[in-house]
Every structure is written in structure tokens, then in C-alpha cells.
Image (cartoon, rainbow, N blue to C red):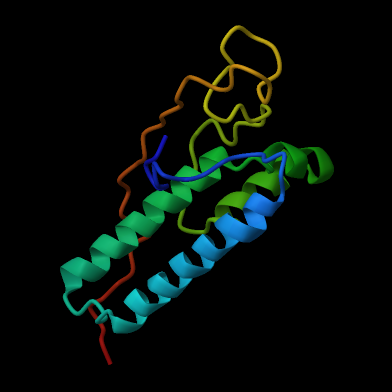
Length: 148
């Protein structure tokens, strides 16, 4: 699923680590430099609609991430389910919207079950996609009415 992530994201394990140092790391540094140049040259959002749109997308991202946090099970096992939910929804992803059923504490299956069963990280790899709706509650929107 690429709702908040690039379809071009690279997940790989290389037998030859030189590929990482000689090819991938220089490409990553170039990407970061280009991104910083774009950020430095961008103008801040000035309209109320633009600011609210950015805030709504951040809220949607937080909800998406809270619902899929792979550490939720670990937090619940170590500190209890209520603590884990409070930590994830109120601290890590503080703009997220809690679901009635709470956190999904089953182990993460990134991308769905593997083809032909077996180890999710093994041959065949993940094949299915998991999609969850994101709510539209605007109660966590910032108030822009009082500008000073």
C-alpha cells in the first residue's frame, strides 16, 4: 500500500554490501540534498484552506501509522494494552483517531500473507495489500480564527 509512501520505496537485502556504500548511499545523499533545496525554496502556506489541508493530511498520516504501528504488540506485552494505546495514540501519533476496537496487537504481516504459506520474509514474499479507511473527524483540527 502506498497511501503515504512512494511506490518507488526500496526494500532489499544485498549479498554484496559494496552496493550500499557505492551506489545506494550516494543516491540517498543526492536525494536528501535535492529535498532540502526544495524545502528551502518553498514558500509557506498562506491561505487557511492550504493550512487546513496540510493539517488534515498529517492527521490522516498519524491515524494510518497508529493503526499499523508494528511495535504495538511489544508495547502491550511490556506495559499493558491501555498504556500501549495511550502511548501510540496520544504521544507517537497524537493527531490520530482511535478506533473503537483499539489497537490491532497481532504480529504485523507487511503486505499480507506470503504466496504459498511459510515464512513471510522467505521466498515468494508478501502479495496481498491491507487497506483501512481513515476517519474524517475534524475535532483535532487547529483553530485558525485567532491570529496574532
